[in-house]
Image (cartoon, rainbow, N blue to C red):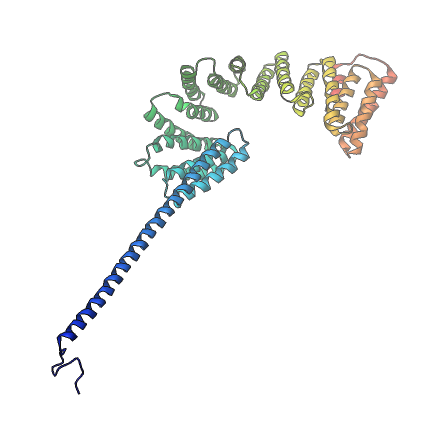
Length: 440
């Protein structure tokens, strides 16, 4: 039995069947077109969504990158006027940010060069020289690969070399230091020309290096170049010119040429005072240094005058009740004692005692040491009752603190004071005075 739709050869039997097939075929074809269209729409949607997601992702990454860049700049600002330890911590943070920018966000390697240089300098200032050398050496290697890519890298190389040279100078590797500093100076001359402000630090460090190596002529040549640069760029009366004089004074001091050392350092201090230099504590340090130069040539009045300037600066900075003020007053008194200016020394030490009581407390060892010296001066002045009083006060404190050697010394002085009191006033010879004041 044949199927209704087939003839003997298996063809559709009539036109109606042909029409049905065409209709079916059309419907089938329509459904396929609709499916293809739907698929194309879906693919386009997927593609559009993918592009949108990629764009969105890129925007997010760019925003993160911008935020990191901004944070780096903010940390640079934040690092100003911070302590060396604080700056070191900031540089560590910046190095971590730089690594994220370079390795995650594809930023240039020069960011790492700068970050390693900055943390190397921070370690240098913190006196961790091994770590400083490690970071600066790494920065130098990375920077060498960027000469053809980064315009700033060549000039930055001189900065890295200078800092490395300073590191080796600090660890007394003078040959290595000088070699690095010379390379830095050559680079600076090639880029900026001979003797510009860019070379000031490098030339100063070269001078220091030559001084350490006792090549004083080469040292003076370097610092003379520095002075010529600073005078031309900043003027004769400037902080930079004053620093040049300070460096020159150090060269003369190393040669024990105290007269010229004093002249240069005095000129530097005068310059800084005239320009109202704000770092007054540094000026105090310079006066203290100048006092040691005067001591070398036994100009004691000038030495005391310098220390008095130091005392005045510290009083203005910290008030009279400060340990730095006390230390300087004691130093002045000791110098006066050596010059046998006993009344001056006594006045200074009595003021020192009053300050020490306020700062350290009445029963402190520091006060007892001052009381011992005051007692010795009073003994020299043959004020026996007052001398014994001061010795007794110092003895009590030394005994309470278990200071056996100091106790023995004071007991010996008490014994001597009692003997002298019984004998009455007498004329001391030099040996007697030295015995009384020994170990003051």
